[in-house]
Amino acid sequence: MAKVVLITGGSSGIGKSIGEFLCKKGFKVYGTSRNPDHYPDSKFPILALDVKHNDTILQTVNTIINTEGQLDVVINNAGAGITGPIEEVPDEEIKANFETNFFGPIKVIKAVLPQMRKQQSGLIINITSIAGYMGLPYRGIYSASKGALELLTEAFRMEIKGFNIKMTNVAPGDFATNIAAGRYHAPLLDDSPYKKPYGDTLDLMNTHVDNGSDPNLMAKEVFKIINTKNPKVHYKVGEFMQKFSIVLKRILPDTVYEKLLMNHYKI
Image (cartoon, rainbow, N blue to C red; front, side, top):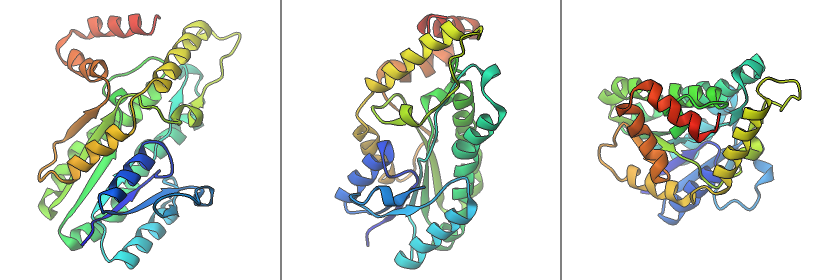
């Protein structure tokens, strides 16, 4: 019987690539979007779900379970970017980002665990970010929300191991997607003390995304993980230097690593 997969944020970018790849491999895939009507040509069903609203999560999860009788793989992919000097990012935008990137996945996990426990099997894949391994200038809120999800997964894995439910993180680097378009940008203020360094960093970030890797690399990695008997705690997918930066952070003194980041971002 085909495995049933739920992908939050499956209408575009990495989520769409993963969904289309898994469909070709014979999986029964359901994606989600806050506006499913905008994606009539999707190669798999797109259901209405907003990770900020628990009722939409429960409704969609129940729809899939009632239709398929099972739910085997859940991919927490819905996420939002955010940039800006932390001092100038409005509190409500910081909270909104954590609602999507951190509290949203928790809500989804809580909604699917009863079914997976009943099946005595299941796999939950949390899409985090290489940015979650380090505090990046002008992306501090994003780094913090994704880093929090990385740590949450470490704890959750141990709690659900006895139910034969597996959980892992997949941290992408920069991929060629439309994330920059949907990102919250704190405005570049003329009278801001951060105007030049923030503006320069913003240009650099957008270049990284525009020149990013093919999202199909993520799809192939997720497929491999689904077919792995005992997934690792953390996976990283992206350019060599992005992955190597995590190794450098582990082995270099903190201030040396900080200097490397500041040189990279020219601040």
